[in-house]
Image (cartoon, rainbow, N blue to C red; front, side, top):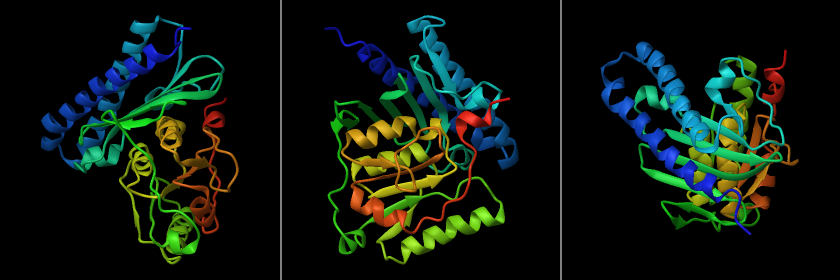
Length: 286
């Protein structure tokens, strides 16, 4: 029987590379001559241009109206962010926009594909590093065509002390939210763990878990387009994926923890101070 989604998977890799080249060119040729304030306008234009390249290419390849799309810029412009049973592309054209503005070398193109509300594959192209992460459900995870797997740091307290944990402070600057974020980080650091890190891009953070460079990543306030592709890559690399309260992973909840194994995830969950965020699939409803 012919594989129904292999063509889409292969094409997603091609499109991610084309989009990543566009992002890289924008950074090299334009942003260096901008002030930081005008660079914010540039990154918005780059986001919009790259998303149009990705969606336009997919529509041309698979036919207008055959697939649905959830894209960061499309949602920002008022499109509903609702996942249906239809074949759906979930796209972040420039994950790590603040990094992009400042020339910090972690910026990714993230493309995921879901059918019947289930993620089928994910592609994350870390374009400044030229690293192509990809995974298809049931077929393993890869970086530049080499198979990857999560870290083998496992077990109870003695093992979590050997772990590096990733988190981000997010974009919500309300004092009560910032306090909870940094309180969680402080408590995790004092377990103690080897260290806390953050690349500034959720997609890249998840790929770092998948490669075994770090043991876990958690964040509250991210969006479905930040983590959809990484979710497939982490699980196919042997990792676990869940809500920050320990429940099942919910793509639209804007809350996520991934780790190399459940014992470490469960230990981190004990220290996370949860705060409310509006779900992606509620935010755009009228």
